[in-house]
Each structure stands twice: as C-alpha cells, then as structure tokens.
Image (tube, rainbow, N blue to C red; front, side, top):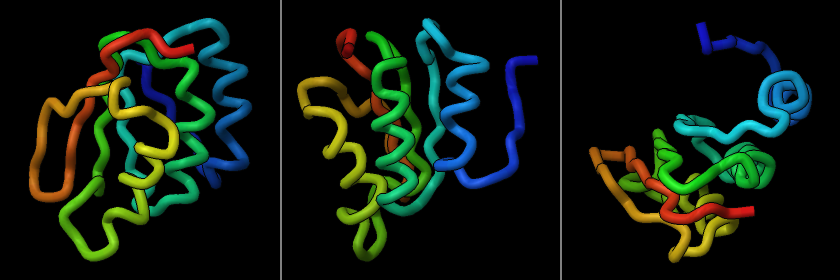
Length: 104
C-alpha cells in the first residue's frame, strides 16, 4: 500500500517522487541501496530535510569491501555530522543508523 516502484535513474525521478509523495511529510525508514557515492550522495542530500528524530536509514553496502570509504559511507559523512546519528545494526556489508535529532 505504501510502496511504489519507480523505474528510471534516481537523479531523474526523485524530485517528482518528493513532490507527489513527501511534501511536508517526514521519513520513518529509508533503505539506501545505490552502492556508489554519486547516487547515494544525491539521495541523502535531497532527503535529509525529510528525516526526523528516530528515522532509520539502512545502507546496503556501507562498509566491508575494498574502497568502501569512497561510496555509501562517504555520502553518509558528506551529508550528516556524526552527532546527527548513531549506528544501531551491522552485518557483513550493511549497517543501519538512527537519526538522533530533528534536522532541518
């Protein structure tokens, strides 16, 4: 009911998704699975203002592989200060964070 599949590049579809679905809403959960820096950074930059205290963001390839510091992890630290979030779960390559304050 609250899941929408949108085909296309995120850079070409996210603005319309925000306009049609988010407006003044806040995000409770976000699954980030873009693997590389550029699309992940784009998404976090655009959606950061829609996060709130207790928003959970799951990263599919945050760490644990060669050059991990150059991709999803880099996008995370490029958009959020380390005081903005806490790590709450880890697996081999995945990690989940929780936003610990309202961010405007």
